[in-house]
Length: 99
Image (cartoon, rainbow, N blue to C red; front, side, top):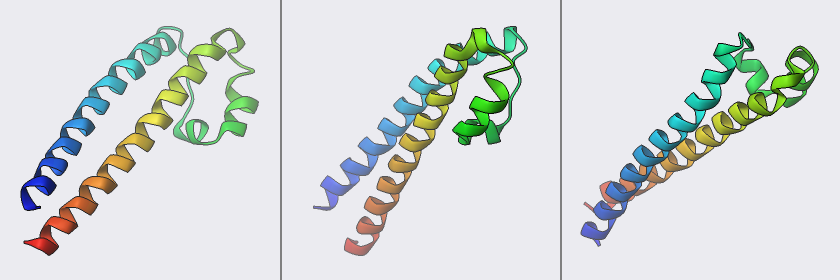
């Protein structure tokens, strides 16, 4: 049981690293387009869809797809990282309990 739990924790850690690298590449592609065109918005816009639609999208309507792609990748990356960290913590706690 201990070896299985260690394997699961190591697998989840590797998965977290892979997800991090994968989404970092996707986010940087979208980010590069936004930076090249001087599109500026803050973290509050990323996490508040209504604020994004009322303040940022009207200023840059021709880059709506790129902005939405960037924001969706950021949100998904944060969700995936949160889930993986919680799973690693859970399995780590189980390992501590069985040790």
